[in-house]
Length: 109
Image 1 (spheres, helix red, strand yellow):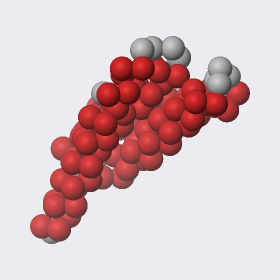
Image 2 (image 1 turned 180 degrees about the horizontal axis):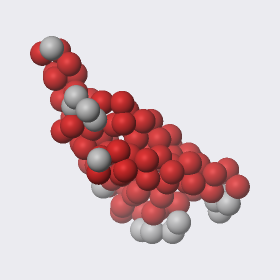
Image 3 (image 1 turned 30 degrees about the vertical axis):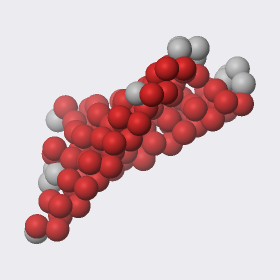
């Protein structure tokens, strides 16, 4: 299942980002971006795996939101322009919508 594969790859990326943040980041701000991105990406990869059988749409939205949120933080930690920080909240919004959508689906059963 493609969602499961993407979630597993997402979790692996999160672990790598966290490890790099702990051992290779160039400064404290960069380490924090990697830590925050890794945490959000890992939590939402696991959540997507947990709900993908019943709530496919919300699982995809959680993965898309986590990718948008985390990858913009990773990019800035690696030297990308700071304006990418304006894109990060879009990922956060997708995460919120994914959780609300999942809650609505579970409420209906």
